[in-house]
Length: 496
Image (cartoon, rainbow, N blue to C red; front, side):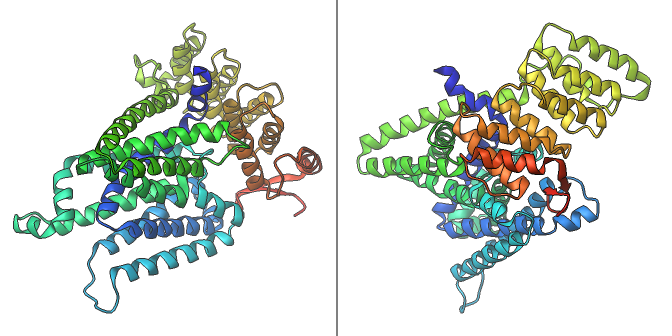
């Protein structure tokens, strides 16, 4: 029972951590959004962020021709941040026009953002697929870079709000009194809107418009129904968001035919909101539900902590952090010899640290050691070696991954790591692994459903979930002719 409960948080560690960060950030700031009655600012900023992502997809061919590396990861984040921050700055300024209200300007931003985003994405390589991911989120294949950016932005926003919590609250709801006391109310209002814009921008690539808007509104409404103060409402709001994050993850993995993760979270939010609404008329019921929600939030934090520990490898050795740095030429042989010894150690934590130390090396001997680590008895060591080889620009790394793909593999999570590594090497064999995942009826439905979406996105084909013959027939017919198209960001037939 416990293993079944922990399975999604161990296998989808990166995705759960990203979803948890988005949930905390959106729910915390959502109380400001709801209390200030600027709910439509959130949806307008989300559409402007979508416009930035759409523009990045449209410019992917230009970025490829200019030799810009990792544009698929960095481009959407940068342009989404730019669009939402400009929108947040604009919305924070008060208009003196008597002809157009603030709500009218929000409507204009929403319409333009939504319409232009669809047009930009429509002309990209996988228009409909990317449009669906933008609406519902693409949580299964969250990249390390996306998680790093999300972590940094979330940390900065929470630090700013921790340092200026009283000023932000005061200036948000009584700006005239704040100005009379010498507090720059306009500056703090701009800061609040910029933090909301940043949270929306980095969350869109993980959760999509639907999830970001829902997390900004529903948890805050629950907090305001159950709590008596602003701070308590924020705590309840965050607890509700974390509960929905955990509940949606479990439902997505175990219920039905692999429910998509963001809508599953939204459904959990809806259920919690109905409970809060039903108990809001009774002070006793409200107090009991608030305690249960806060306790559930603590338990949800514990489950997400499992993902954090798997992601960050809390058991790694910290005795010699110099291994994680790029080695100097004069000490390469000595360090390589030490790492080889560590890879033979009995403790998995020491072997894991050695693999992480080898990840930054551009040496054939390091690739050979990483290839050997693919057969390690500890799955954490295996998956760390997989990720390192996926980022290594050498034929040896590619061959090691192909050898692993040709033999039996482990858990669904390890197979997804292998798929990512092969796709990073532009190997079409990654598609074959997705097809095998689709045919594995013993795997949780979530993995099969998301594997189907990933296969359709990377192949440009349309398949049904249970059409096993169609997948195999397409693969047998096309596998020898598939080539990676950098401009389209997918595999195409060599005769196309």
